Length: 499
Image (cartoon, rainbow, N blue to C red; front, top):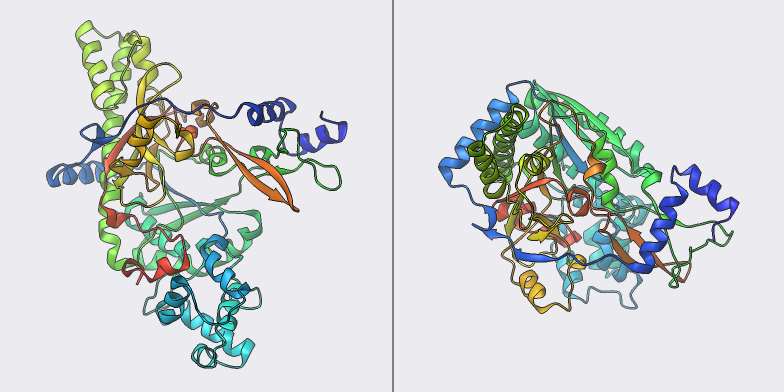
């Protein structure tokens, strides 16, 4: 099935023939649905700390940072913003000229509230010889939308989301990239330095670097810190081969194999290369203006405090296991693993080896918010490969929709995951874990796409906070809805939280 030419193409990407064969096999077999025990809830896998506990966790985090630990803020930022503007692309191509749908009416009615209004007004004057108000007055709404989307205007239809103007300030509008730099200064700085890492697409790397060079010094002065800002791209070796509907390799017109990015699960490789004790992970579009940041900052400190408190106990127990724990101590450690790390042994023998396995692995604390119908993965108690049950973040595609009991758990779940993670990635001896060792390779996603009018099947790797972190110690903490303000469409920027 694979030619000499294919093998050369595969080798150039740093992928093995065996990996391609495995991927083609996965198209045939699909991925098994996960076996669920229950949706996580407060008191059943989700911790809801009271005010006193929150203060203790914030203090624990501040004490941890004071030890000179290296903290990094990791921001997946490679996504283009094109999906944000789906409705406006449709309007530009529509066979009518005036705003007709509710979405279009809302956009033009409140256009002055967008942080990019002044920039858009300037390109309209330059390209059309008229400002936005004049264009709208004469019914030329499409020119306004086109100047926002097209290359000769703001080019928002092609730019990465991190480079769009999201929020207005007296000193000028800010992009999400800038808001993340501010957040890094407020809760992730240690030793007077904030380490912030963005994963970006190759096409946008230079643009990000240029913007950072323009903006970072101003924030460094404002917050009295130094920045260490780094970038990485998704590795070609994490791309996956595309398949035809009959599961044979999909080929381009010239006969070469088609590779596609492996999804955010590929970023486990980038995460693995970060030199850090603790890593915060948060999506590029989940940011708020300064007036709302205190709540976000407090809760980031809380979940980090939960993490380092649990890690300290886990490390102490691992050292105890090294020395040889008594039966009473083994019972105490087993209670910690079950009650605090939420790992139920089920049929597994709970001995020193089992406890060491469950303690000596990466750890993450995930903020979860009350379910208000936003799209996103949910927190569940799930069966693992070794028969234990632990906490996992699942996407809807990992759940068997024909299983009524599971669908009830999914639809009636009280919480969902807004991608608000803080991770501990070193072991009790100070050595970094090799994170790919903890991926559940039996998870992943297959979706239908098209290329040049031909249907194809695309394979995504186990998601970064799903299967890629499957074998981590996981704890869920309920955080307020105010800490979750994603921007999925341009009109989300009109929400009060982004004004």
